[in-house]
Length: 575
Picture (cartoon, rainbow, N blue to C red):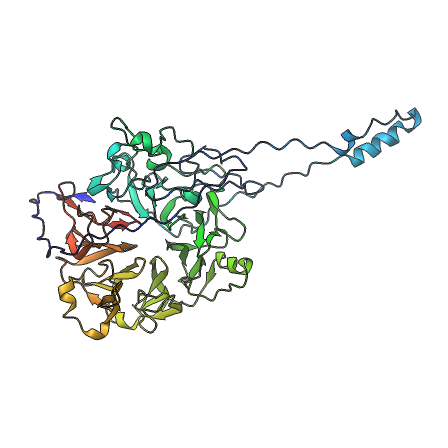
């Protein structure tokens, strides 16, 4: 975001018709598991600046106990219980009575026998240092101002432990991400955490650290207090942990990285983070979750508490993450997917006979998208449980969960658990010249080259951004109606076809979405939002659902040119 120069203050756009709908009750945040008693020590807290030296990989990956569980609005945390140390084992020879002294003429032979039977320490195999490959990616360079809003009770806003770091109703400049001192060049929102890349080649994370999403230990924050204490009038911290609520670097102490490596892109899922290098290597940490809970991060690592190299992936040029899956694009135009695939979000056949065969989806594999210089894939994006790819010839492909028609395919929309199992061209987007596309949990948003904005999928929480009265003017065959809770009256619930939003002043250039909320940015530097706002994640200052596209406007951003946006599970940001 840059400051406007010699430009008079823009008058805020007239807010569309007021939402007369009754206030939407906030949905209960997803339940988090209770933290089990720890049986091992938590990882060391040592951190390094962005690595430039080769580091040795550990002989064995360390197992680290599960991180504490934390609800989105949880107010208390407990330090993990430490298990007592196991008693030292006695050697077999120590348990036996001492043997009588051997005769002098047998001393040499006995000594040789003892030496032969003594345990020998195997030499530690030294990992080969990584050699940096050819540079195929360049990092962004523009320093960004970061304005945050929404729910911050778990540190998602990165504002630290200040009493005002929770329930930020409108955009607020984050001083911990100062454009000059820190220099964020890219920022991405996960479910309840964020990751950012800086101009001086650092990676920063903050927010909820359940399952290792931050890539570092956070349990020893020295400002952690109980929410009972925080509720008092003289509290100064609101119960936030400073090791989660302040942007900090992951722990690189056990990560092997080639000399001279530069980071070029970051991505985040619900409990994962990824970082891409200039020579096409991909690192990640955290874990994926499936329908039954913990799913794993790789085929051999359940939870990666520190960054680790993903060696199967080489020459990667783009990385994106959904709620519990990831997709990478390599320089040949081939797409790779991995993670939990129970909603077909990987775009490839998965086997679910046993836990072990199901976990094979944690191995990155190519899947059915076109390749080649003319028809290959140009860009990739995701929703929570569905995904998109735009080919070089302009076709849009989608796959994954389709119970609310969020993929843009209509054949099984509205059916419980409906999914598009393999990547298919979205016929309704043909010829629209889509340049930017993204999905929320059950809806999707796209922008065209000429600045039009299209939406489709669920409409239950205002995800369409279209005024309810205007829905009556839409053709009936593109609306799917469902019964209300009393099963007496039907109302439009699914927008089956991509439909243009007309209430946005200006050409849309960027789109962002998560859960039931969307934000778009126009060429003129303005941001519009709509959808569920129970935690102020629309940035409009209201916790009522915004059923129409509404301009985000306050004194903090009025003179700024907005160039980007992001949405988390219950918060958002503008840059």
